[in-house]
Each structure stands twice: as C-alpha cells, then as structure tokens.
Amino acid sequence: MDNNKMFILILLTVVFGVCLLFSVGIQKADQGHFDEMQEMIRGKGYKIALFTNMLFLATYFTYDYLLGDIWVKLSASLLALFSIVIGVTTYISYCIWNNAFIQVNKKGTGAMIMYAAIAILNLLSFSLGIDRFHLTINNGILQFNGLFVQLAMSVIYGISPIVYFARKVMDRVES
Image 1: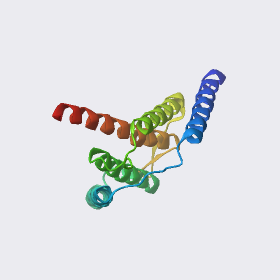
Image 2: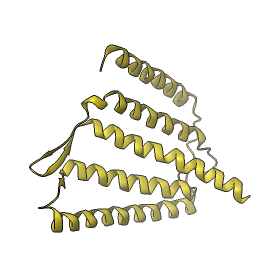
Image 3: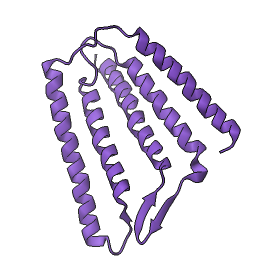
C-alpha cells in the first residue's frame, strides 16, 4: 500500500474518531431501556441465531465427514469466523426486523448511519489491501490472512443498516 492510500485511510479514521467523540460527548445521560416485549424478542433472536449457527456447523460437519478427504476443508479460524458472522448477523437482523434492537423512545437512524460508515471504512480498508489478500490451501485446508476479518466486519456492519432501512420502508408501505 502506497503512502497516498495510507494517508487517506488514516485521515478518514481520524475524522471518524473525532466525530464519534463529539457524538458520545453530546449524548444524553438517559441511556434508555428495553421493554419486556423487546427483551422477549431479543431472547428469541438469541435462540434463532444459536440454531442457525448449529445448522451451519452441522452442515459443515457433514460435509467434512463425507467429503473432507476429497475436497478442501476450512481452517479452524476460518470456520470460527464464518460461525461468528452467521450468528451475529442472524441475531442483529432478527432484532432489527422486529424493532427490538433500539431502546424504547430512541431513534436508531444515527446508529445505523454509523454502522454503515464502519462497514464502508472496513470495506475501504479491505479494498486498499486487496493486493495482500491471500486465501491459500495448505495440506487440503483453506487458510486466510487477517485482511479477511475486515471483509467479515464489513458484512456484519453493512447488513445492519440495510435491514433497518428496509424495515423502515416496509413500515411506510404498510401504513
């Protein structure tokens, strides 16, 4: 990565950090709370995320048991990263879709715009380092470098605002 790209990335990070500090400083003392219905929905979200994760791991286990010697296996770190992304994305998407992600009497638009900015920064960082991105197969095991984590974080943080704004559009269409 050349100095120009590094400067732009650092500048964006500093500007984003300063904006974040000001937004945290301006935030009201009232942190809000989740009501009983939101807590129930969040509990169901945990359950759905757990079963989705178990389904993914059971599918991978079956694949590994039946075809692992023939085809490529995932490294333990790549399998854990996929599992985290699937579980967290399922939980967040379910909670956002059922209006249990933002506390009572709070607006989530600002948080979702910040999530979108984080996703874009992670995607930008990933794209700036794409020349160093490596997926390699060593002894039949698919391995990756740390740049893949930025792509995973951009997926998690990028899906949240998409689901949130899709839900807002659905609410407007229904009313």
